[in-house]
Image 1 (tube, rainbow, N blue to C red):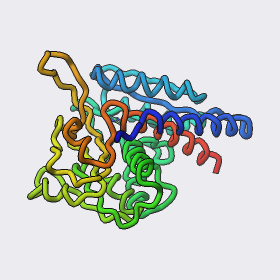
Image 2: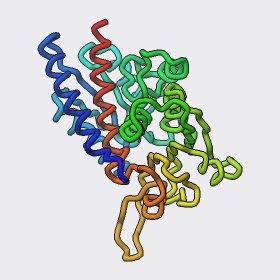
Image 3: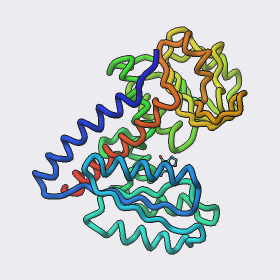
Image 4: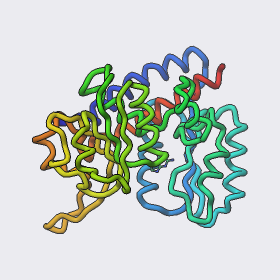
Length: 287
Ligand code: GUN
């Protein structure tokens, strides 16, 4: 069966919309998110447009700062400093990837950790690593765990979770979250030996590798819960453009217990969790 990320995300947004209305009437403050976009990457422009639209729809302020490809690192840092010091801005997101002449980690480190709604700052990764509740948790991993719970319920204790991928954005944080949920966690990656056998152990399989249809049905344990983080654009045999995940969905659906489709799985959850993090940042700004 499918895990319907579009539906779970809608329910989360509906809940957040109520909380945002309450927050505004209680404190007279409207939560706000500023997104910085550098350069012309077309996928990034689509993602940012969608983030801005969803932020406004839910009743928060969304500012978008579009900068040209040749923006210097110094200028971007100066913009961040202004936003960090502006009390009316609760969330800051710098869309990645940045142009190659800009050092991404220097930019992420320059965001005020309390406004870092992506949860990418080392302070937030450290808080997550330490299991501290103040951590702002990266959006996609948060969404992945919510989708697992949607199918398996809230108690994941003792489940063997295999995460394929070790990025700072998905693999490592999702592994930390699953560990907090008392799963036994294996992080697999491009150098893992016997990857199919490792995957066959998984009650929960999270795949974030960026390779279309990478995980085959033979790798999947009967009844497993599969979260497919991949978004890959491919051409079909008929020459049509299609979005597919990192899992060979058509073959795996009959064998697994539940799987997130692409599109309509993890993607909508990422934005919903960004809205959640922005509201949390606004609430924390009052403390
Ligand atoms: N580019 C692709 N995904 C993301 C994300 O979650 N946050 C940011 N800032 N950039 C991205």
